[in-house]
Length: 158
Image (tube, rainbow, N blue to C red; front, side):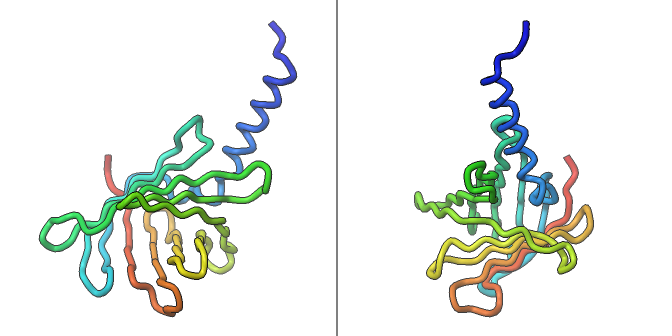
């Protein structure tokens, strides 16, 4: 049975949405990390996976303090905006806080990665790959030149 033109249009949009996520492919996987936030040491867990037909990337991060208590957790949903032709993120964290931002893909010549900024009063988030098996995440508070949080992740087994 031949496909209807509308079905072909949907397939093309799905493919464009999936292909538009290519600058974020380095994030996909299961990661374990060490770092600090506001000077306090932390252990991190990060899982990034395609969801909803591969048209979104879901990133779940949990940061654990020295005593084993949860310090921070969040979920970010990355997508390629078909109408605007750019990457976007919806960032969620307790207590019921959300932010939405454009995501800038950084030039490979400068180390690659992505940077997003939700606005002048919100943090900037930098993700940078180091080879296929290491990531850096730096969170900069408004007006601060040094990151308030810096995590170094390595690919985890399983």
